[in-house]
Length: 560
Image (tube, rainbow, N blue to C red; front, side):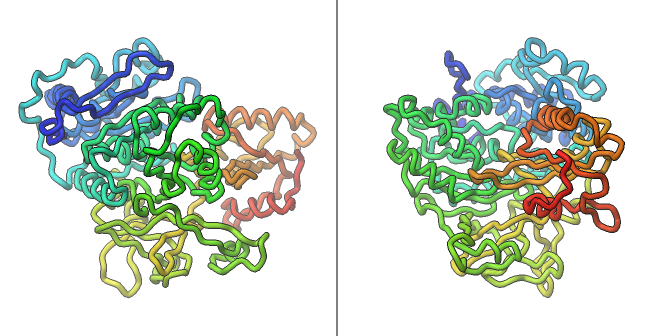
């Protein structure tokens, strides 16, 4: 940041596009440094290096100022989503309890004008409120910062989304950020001319690292939109790419389907997408059908068939794990669906058995990827399906104050090898003879919808508490792929015997309302079943995979 402020001080670094037009807030590289330095001095005068600061901001540029202010002060930033007004399932409370912040950073406008309820809601958090919009920028911004971080110092905690009971904060160091930023630069082929346009939330690692930090790393402009603005009017994202002649823009797979569904020729009149060289697609399973539909729809607006860029990453590796090369286009592999369910890669025997997998690129410069048998720890050969393991300088040191989870995830050892520790991703895949990585599934029961992780037990807990007729520990939540290729949520839940004659439609409605309210997901199907018919292990653990198979086969004892 200091380098860009010195070399490109007057150039535009970030622009925010408000939902309904009007003035567009702007930060130059020098302006960012001056404002961040002022925040850093304010924090350094009230805290100690290593203290945590929770970042609670509406979409805009204040988050970026606060994030860099923390880094300049040696304070560990904790990006967070603002708690919803009416949600009893509050992930923020568990995160705040885990990281124990010294500061709660926000703006006076958000807290006093829009969300005064946060005062009472977070009253028991022993942290000081800091209004970053009240702190005047440093004149000139040339003075030395309060702290000089080292490579191994923690820059920020990236909390993995989904679980409120046991949140895990990935400890991302300054060195991790620098190394993965360089990996992204090489893989994407980015330069100072690689303008970005992004709507992805800044508390999400994709929004922060691959957009905001990568653009600053290469000295390019980053144009930002509010996530809700994209969800409501996705074609505005494409119009912004046209207006700013952006080279790089992307998001989860659902974003591309969303643009196709909302396409209107009259709304795209005059929009030229030929500048869009790299459309990265990650954070959830990448669908070949999605890529084909998007290319077919927007080719008439100059979108190139070589622009789609499937990639794979996760917070535990800072962000990016694998990617291709700019303008190469996606790589595909047609396999047997039946064989894939048995974790084997074979050619399809007939057309109806065919499934197309999308390659997610190759290992990055300075990184190692291995496919490993998750039970034996044995390295597997190209073309064999196993767990994806990763090693490299971008792999984080572990989870904040959680040594047990850190050992389970970050201390993988390949049998018969002395190559050090590996990150166990929990994802299944294979590498072909050319080195292309293909993702085939997950070991963990994680549900990914619209790029957000949801843990089944969280949803199941919400369901069983939504109505007195529902049996505790008698539900299963899992994902299925619908007709359009998107992942959808299915809920299977046992009803207590004495309530079988109740108004089952009202029970279903109660479940639906609770899941939407607490998790912001609309269930695809809700299935009420007889007591004692949900598959469980002998120790009482829910067999979600078997429940999914039974539902797909129509073999559940369905009441409604």
